[in-house]
Image (cartoon, rainbow, N blue to C red; front, side, top):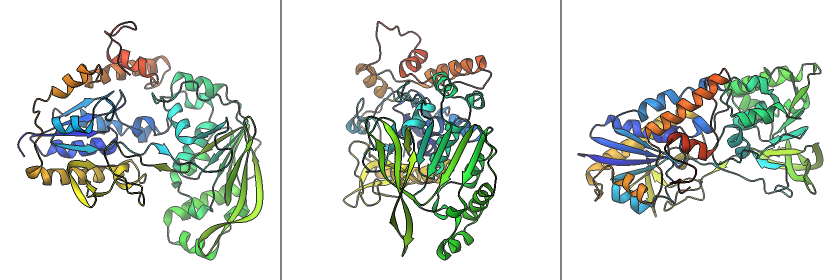
Length: 455
C-alpha cells in the first residue's frame, strides 16, 4: 500500500470523513476535489443560516482538510475540467461523494409557472450558493405554499417567516438579507400529502417554528385525528409521539393576531399549480389511506399563493461514467465499491448520498465515509497503480486547461474576507455568493481584464 494516492470528489461531510479515514491509515495522500471554490458542501450550502450549532461542524471538517496528508482543490469540476480517465492516470483510487442536489418534481400542471420553484433553489439562494442567481427571488408574494413536511420544508418555512432582523446575526449574504427585509410575505402554508404520523421532520426543527417572534403557528385539530394504525405507529416511535404533542399544543392555541402566520396542513395532495401568467394558488385534493395506500377523496381545496416551493425530496444524478440503480436511486455498490453488472469497478468508490440515497443527518456521513475508506484500503494491494506519481501533475494539468484550482490558502483568503464582512455586520461571517468574487478573493493577483478563469 506504499504511497497510495486517492482522489475524493466532493468536500462535504461524506467526502471529508472518507478523506479523514484514509489519511489516518498512513502513507496515503488524499486530494479532495470540489466543483465550488469553497469547501464543506451542504454544511455550507444546505444547513439553514440560523442553525449555527449545526453549521459549527465545519470546524471538524476543517481539521481534516488541514491535515498534511490531505490537499483541497476547489473550483475543479470533475466531468468538465477533469475526466474519469484523468483521475485514473493520477490516482490509485477515486471516491465520489458529490451528493444528490437535484430536486424531485411534482409532475402536476402549472409546475413551471413563474412563481413556482423548487425548495432546493430557494435554499441555494439564501445560502449563498455560487450557482444561484443573485436576483432569483424577490418575495413580493403575500402567500407562500411550501409543499412537503420534511426538515428542508421546515427550514424554508422558518426562513420565510422570520424577519430580516432575526437573520441579520447569521451568515446570510447581504443581497438575501435585503430581499428578506423587503418581504411582503404574511402567510406561509406547509402542505403534507399524508398525516402527521408520516411527516419526516424532527421534533427539534418542528419546535423551532413555534419560537419565531411575530408569528402564529396554526394547526387544524381535525388533521391530527389518527387512525388505529397511525396511533400504533405513533405509540411505537418516540419522535412521532413528540411531534404529535407539539402539533396538538399548537392546535389548542388561540392565534394572537401576529403579523405573520404559519399554517401546517396535512392530508392534502397537490394536483395543480394554479395561474395563467403567474402562480395564483395551489389546488389540492383531500387524501386518506386505504389499505395503507394514499388515495384521493375527490374533494378539492384551493390554497391562495403567489409563490409555491416544492420540497418533495432529492434524486441522485451519478457523476459521468458511474452507473445508476433505477430501483434504489443510488449508484450500485458493495460497501462503497462501485459495481457495474454486479462486478466491482477497480479503484472507484462512492460515499454519502450517491451510496445510500438522500437520507440521514450530517453525522450519518461519518460511518458511511469510513466504511468506504475501509473498502478502498482493503483493496489497496490489488488496485492498479496510477501511472503518474507526481502529486503536482494534476495541478499542472488544470493549469494547462486554464482552470484556477483554489487551494487551501485561497480558501483561507475567502474565509478571512467573509469574516471581515461579518465584523461589519456584527456577526461571525457574511457569505460571499458570487463565484467571480470568490475567485478574485482567492486569487487577488487576478484582474478583470487578464487571465480570468475559464469558468
